[in-house]
Amino acid sequence: MRKELVIALRVTAVTLVLTGLVYPLVTTGLARVLFPWRAAGSFVSDEHGRVVGSELLGQGFTSPGYFHPRPSAAGKDGWDATSSSATNLGPTSRKLRESTEKALQTLVAENPDARGPAPVELVTSSASGLDPHLSPAAALWQVPRVAHARHVSEDRVRMLVESLRERRDLLVLGEPRVNVLTLNVALDRQFGSPVPGGTSATRVP
Image 1 (cartoon, rainbow, N blue to C red):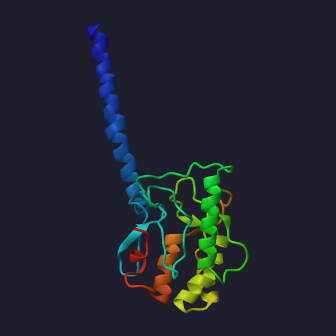
Image 2 (cartoon, one colour; image 1 turned 90 degrees about the vertical axis):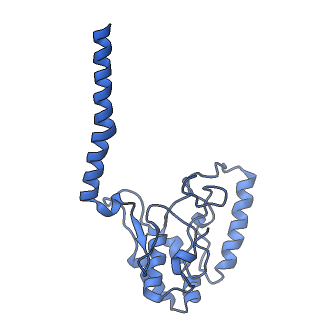
Image 3 (tube, rainbow, N blue to C red; image 1 turned 120 degrees about the vertical axis):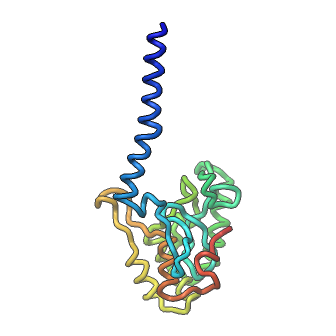
């Protein structure tokens, strides 16, 4: 019995050291060497060098001079990275229909010059509530509002959106998309910030 107990304790200790210390340290070290930017959190800096967020986590923007992301149900006021979640409301939910209709009315009022129907993703939250991307169509739909707020031509803003279009991973995985934070930072770098503080001041608190 004592011999078996000693063997079990040794196996436990070795397993803890290998999986709890050695493996995490080795994988973290390799990631830091091979993918330093990704391993550090994929942080995005503005034109002044200030970190304004991560490419991997969506955040809210409310200023008309910036592209707005999908609505968020993460946390009480949305965009809470510590409370990633969806609404869990099904397609037959009356509450979902009412909130979608309200969001649509607000969206249309904020984008009076937008062409075509509003993309459904702009009035519905994602499963995580922290989706950092929009489809190119949803970003382009907002171009008239952003261009008007910044007093630049729609063509220039549209060209910027197209230049930041991300393709499918490995050419087959996912869909073409645009990172909202990266796009808004690029707007400030190319056209200047429409509000004091730039992207760091226009996010939803």
